[in-house]
Length: 112
Image (tube, rainbow, N blue to C red; front, side, top):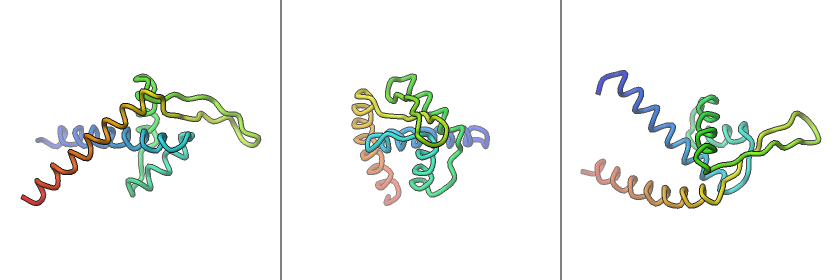
């Protein structure tokens, strides 16, 4: 794989993992984008591109896996709150099973 192809592949993998992490986080509680980014950075233990997170959120909304609504707080500006749809819950459940299987395959490759 050449440098450019490898970079694209790594970005695709990261975007996929960010998608799964967002769905997993939203399965526990509804959050606004900034709070999601903070949790993602805790999970990944590195800085996560803010534009990437919002691009992923938009794609998840387009697929019907996530919805959002504007919430007006008592202090500060209105914030967009994201939550998981029923379709998103089912999708996440399947993808978590797939991820466990993939982790097992990776372990076998590493141990080979």
